[in-house]
Image 1 (cartoon, rainbow, N blue to C red):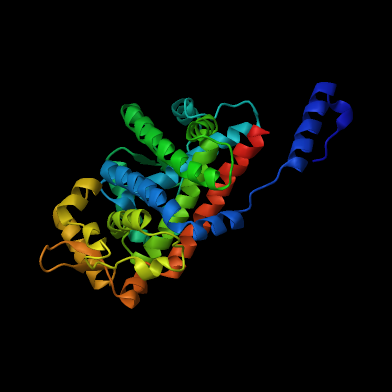
Image 2 (image 1 turned 90 degrees about the vertical axis):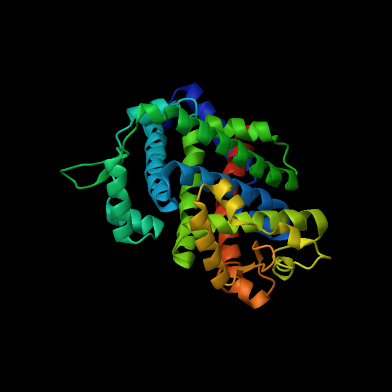
Length: 354
């Protein structure tokens, strides 16, 4: 629809003109620039990225008892944030902040999803989705609309504090991650400023975050067929990248494949080994399950088990290590997926600053 300027007040016309002028002056950060930044600063940026992912996935695992169940719930949370965001179509002043999040959840019409649509979004087999959604329904988290046969998420008051506290922690971690990018781009944003911006326009940012997160998890579901494995992979990758950050310089996406997993005494990577008990304590995955999944990662060639310590470390053998998990395709896909999200945040920050 074209604008009818004759029906606009002078105030509205001048405001719109100012907006259009700012938009013309705005130098947008392209996702390709973020991709390049990530590739050239791989260790610096991915350590905090994987820590953020580990915290997020651990939190939802502990809440729902499996990542598959948690991922299904996140599909509904994403749709609800989009529904909140759409309130701005009829009221530009609608408050989509984190402070108003719970009230917004209570006042929107709940979006409904089919089992088949959740399966498509997540990559989780349809029968598994059906089984998990049945349990969520029995627990009161979901309700099935008897007319449409679709499901919607129940907003339960007793879950309010848990949901708000968990999300608040994730916002802080996400803000620190985005701050790393802003520094490398010489943008004058503090971590607190980024945090406040995300909280102010919460449903906008959280919808985009979950949208990209679900795309990333679908990739791993396709590759691993078991996203609980991903959570254990992160526990092995984080200390290894931390050690590389501390002791190696000038490493990027290309040569990182050559050093991760080197565990001779001289390199110090032998100190990055992980054990089933520690992984269980961090992730919430039962110890017996951790042992079984760690052994599966050995079979997949990602980990090696020490005969002496019975601990696990990333495989030294380049071809085995990069065969299933640390492939260039997987790493590149991760970078491209989240570069799009990061550019959305940085561009919003830049535009709001202007």
